[in-house]
Length: 104
Length: 393
Image 1 (cartoon, each protein chain N blue to C red):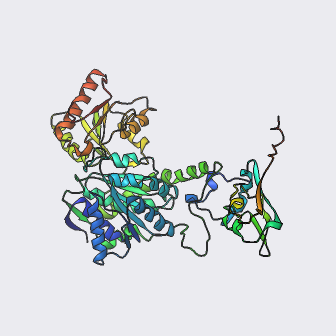
Image 2 (tube, helix red, strand yellow):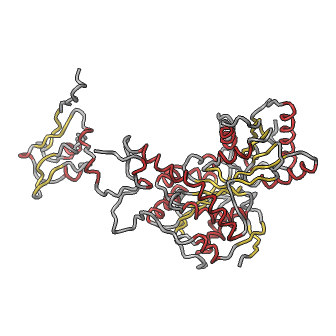
């Protein structure tokens, strides 16, 4: 994504590109763990959807379908808030793939 | 028609506010600027002004209200002093960062501790890097004139930067002077209609004001912000000239008093400059070639123009009504000494801190400074760069 020079920016930090936070892939912040959705335990209470700070819970046809890892930061709030006895969201280890060239 | 009125500095600012009638005025009363706020509230209660007057729970909130109202698209002002300005601190930077043309009348006053309610420049000098344009006034008339011009400067499309107008606590704020108050209609015409850029209350345009910037954009936005204050000098000059044409009192970046053939110069801002003029007159009668340079605009600092005015002096004393703990000299001195660095021909230069907490500065003190400058020109040597005036040693 091309970044503007200081001369191209709108005065006073005004951002006229409403809703542009979708361009900010907060999933890159995840470090070491991610939530895993277990569909058969889900009671469709939507707590995870409500509490997720990054709108990373995917909903289709009024049903929780899973997690959008482009935006999920791996904070684990969804898993903590999941009220079922057998959690429908559990945190699992995530191996971080290092970029080519940074591997030792 | 302009009229002569007997007013103190606070009432003078309130009078200008009445004439300008901004959309929103938000202020928390603090001595000694309380009277500004009080008088505005009275005007509002008497139906003399139509703008909203908001009295929130603190100065921090007052500046927050100003930021909100200015973002919404209103013409906005506030007034405070001392601790009140200090409490506004974090919001000052936000007002400047958002390029909101808010105008503030600041009654210059010391900061605690110890508690002291009297005049010095510690408050606004502390805010010198907050991004606000700073204008200082020698007397009530200048405070009135500067306050009116401040709106034109702040609101200029190439500037769009908040402006504060300083007037010395008590010495100006509470002293009665005869003020030429200009005709209401003429002041309104001079100010003109306010046209906000990107008002938040615009249903046709979706936008975010004050979004988060990470490491990839903050630097660019801060550089972008500087354009406003860097564009200000030509606007300040043009507005000062236009004010002169319209009302007969022209303003520039600084005032030079008996500088034409001066060999030594005292640099001092605000009310003390008035006393210094009398001292210069007396010294001139004694045959001493002393001049005065009174800076009016401190931010953006007119470094080139001041250096040009001072470079041919043999010795210069810069007087600061505030200290800068741990720095090599007080704020005005460091600016001026820095401005002269690139000149091959430059004067010897010394710094005095004076008048902290409202300590008087009299003609005799300026004469002490002039005598010191004379000794420097005779010996060509500066023994002490930094000193204090009228302090018990």
